[in-house]
Image 1 (cartoon, rainbow, N blue to C red):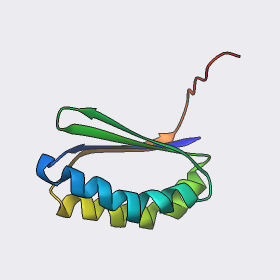
Image 2: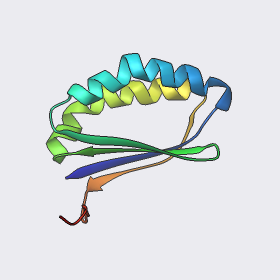
Image 3: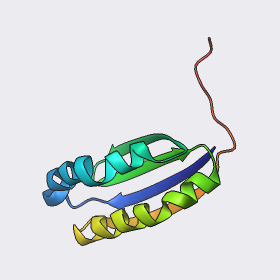
Image 4: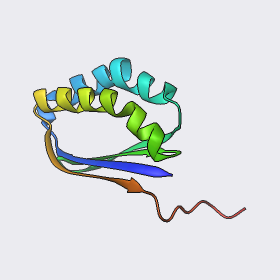
Length: 97
């Protein structure tokens, strides 16, 4: 697996509009992308962490142009990037069966 983590300071005044736009413009593309495993958004006050998990690095790289276009839109809405990390997922835990 391969994971991308994007942390941003959120512009609270634009959050509802951004979420609505993501539901139409970004999330469907993400869900339809080859190799997509899951997306998680964690909120801690005005610091949000987006986590995208892929089957492999090649799938993540194939989606990178779409992701970068969305990240640019986030910045235009005032959601300021803090950190971005990406790489091979070295530990993945799932519930015991």
